Every structure is written in C-alpha cells, then in structure tokens.
Image 1 (cartoon, rainbow over the protein chains, first blue to last red):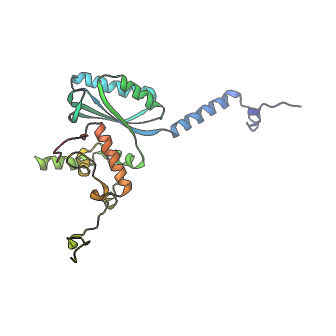
Image 2: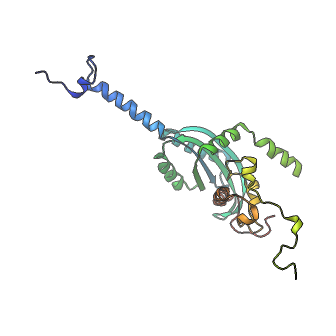
Image 3: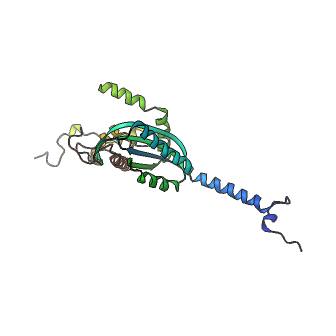
Length: 157
Length: 83
C-alpha cells in the first residue's frame, strides 16, 4: 500500500513539495489582503509656529510612515496657512495638509496613534472614501473644481 | 372670516425640491466650507429640512459633512453674523 500525503495527492501527477503550496498560500493571502484595501483621506492641522522646513519635515515624516506601513500614497496636498473658524490651542491659524492613500484598514489605528503622539499636529480627521467620493476625489485631483473657485475669487475681488 | 386656515399668499406656493437630486450631486465635500455655508444659518446651526428642502438621504450627508468641517475648524460651532 502506497501512502500519499495530502499535498501530493492534489498535485495531479507532478511532484510538488510542501513549500510550493506554502508559496501559493502566501500569494493567495496577499491577494486577499489587497482586496480589503480601501481609499482613505486624512486632513491634519499643524501648528503655525513652525518654520517652512519643519513643516516639510513633519509632512514627509507622516508620508514616509504611511509608506512604511504599506500604504499607497496617492496624493499629498498642502493648503497652506489658513485662518481657522475658531481657536485651537489658542491659535487662530493653522497649516492644513491633506493626504490621500489606499491602505489596509488595520493600518489606520497605527497611523492615528502616531498623529496623536505628534505635538505639532493640532487636529486630524481620517475618512473612508466610498464609491462616489472616489470619483469626486479623482476629479478634484485633476483640478476640475479649481477653475470655479478661481473665477469666484476674481469675482469677489 | 373666509381666510381662516388658508395660506395667506396662495399665489406664491412653490414646490420644494432637493438640489442634490435635481443636479445629480452624489457626494458632499466636507473640505468646501463655502458650499456648506448654504446649509447653515447665521449662528452656524444646520438648517432643517423644511427650510433647505433636502431629501432625507442628502440631509444626513449634509449634516455629516458640516460636522466634519466643524471638527477641522473650517466651519464654526457657534458664532454670530456668519453671513
């Protein structure tokens, strides 16, 4: 009587060892992981007391952190120094930064912990993008809405 | 006495409509405070559905967007003379 291991019996005559199936399984896991990736958008406000270099360093730090955690950073947008509607930490202005990325949902918690630790960041908000907002975000990135805004600003001037 | 329980300006009755449904807007951006300003009153309160005419679905989305904008200090929680 010939004894077959279970992986041997699935290999249809070609002899495969256990590691082959391990690699297949890992590939499958990666595929599953990619399926669960979602689009996110984070807006955070940095304190206005920083210099330009410090702001750039901080933004780079968070973008690199996202990349290290395994996210695809799609877009980074600096809105510049803006006047806030109310004072946060006794400051009336803030430096707004928006990051769009595609990532695994488990990553968000780690990223937000880092944002909470950072004293330069006064506020942040992460939102999941649904199918309509993904379309909107793409149009926004292409600058379809900027023309209207510019026209409005000219009109008000 | 004939006018009791009847609207005073009968000629001016206009049907309310949801502007999102009419123009086919599917997503309300919380990053655009100038647009959201249409749905708050002078004190920064969210306007009710009976004034803005939004459908229930979009009223919910507008409210969420305004609340997100408030968190990011794009819109105020309380003020006077916003408009």
